Length: 64
Length: 400
Image (cartoon, rainbow over all chains, first blue to last red; front, side):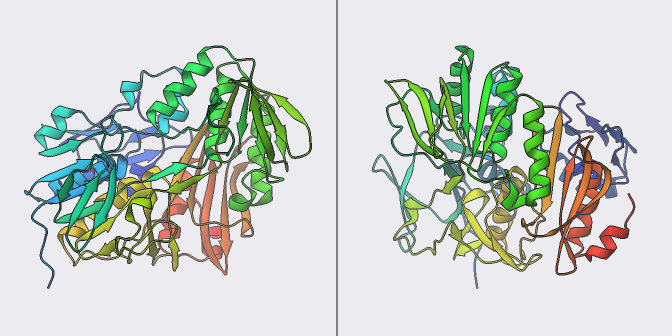
């Protein structure tokens, strides 16, 4: 799985960072950084929670 | 022994209702799912209605949360333009405003809330509330007619966002607030003053400690009379004075009501009936407090929780840390937790003068909340501490 963030939609609300701080980080510049674009399958449920709870629906998962 | 429902009916086709429907499918529920909505629109997102859509930056379609193809592929039937008028729990039957009766098995109540209005403004053009997409488009049309002056009644978060968006469109704005300091009951005086200054800096004529006596005109609104006797000319008035949960249709149903549908800690309102979103009141065990939360994040999460609870009685209490954001001008204001105006407040990072900071709230030795101005990473870090029931001292000592 590969994480895709639509940065035109992302508003840096940082909900994803709270759920998966090892994968998503909003830094002091207020921008979101993806720390790990291709997390392990074991992380799938957390990433899916990020997808669902993003207020801007800016996160998706590409399967490849 | 409770059995899982064979079919689920969701009343309310907004964020909570849609999330409930999607959660049912995620959990593997394969029975019929019906979403009944009072509006004629498929589920859409409300936050952009006071910002991007109202500003004219987004076409209304961009606020859509789903489309008919997606619903169809998920096997969710959306029945729109239908108000549910009554619930008969014993007969497990809904009555629609058309008179049609609809049998249900499992039921999720997500009818949300509606805006409070001011009496005496019926039939007066140019007086608005902002809740629905139709409200937004009507207000936007009035904004596009280049009014001379906009009066916003109520400097809560929705009023504040409308004022900010109207200023962004170059309109003159008077913002009227009954409290001496906006948001002081929620954020305390100090942080309320910060919010007030943001508006003044952007040219809003903010009148505080004053109520509205009368909104008058001649078919179209012309003037707002304030409680101090002064008057403000107005071509457009937006009233943002809070919401009322939509529970009237449940009177006499046997469900317990009281500023919302009263649920247990797991969001169960009755056998086979759960509630979610703005309409649901439940004891949040994390805070030891019964609450009804009107935030986007709560509607989404509680919708999912209510769906899972309906399918499985082993699903436990719903214990979120309430959180919301409000975008005003170039500031992203976020609040997490359950704060009161008299909590202790300490700025933990950044500068209030620069309007880029986070402040934490404490009561009885525990961190109760965090307020951020353009500090999303800190808000989320402290939100985690609130979730862990950290002490105020631990939170003050934390470094992020």
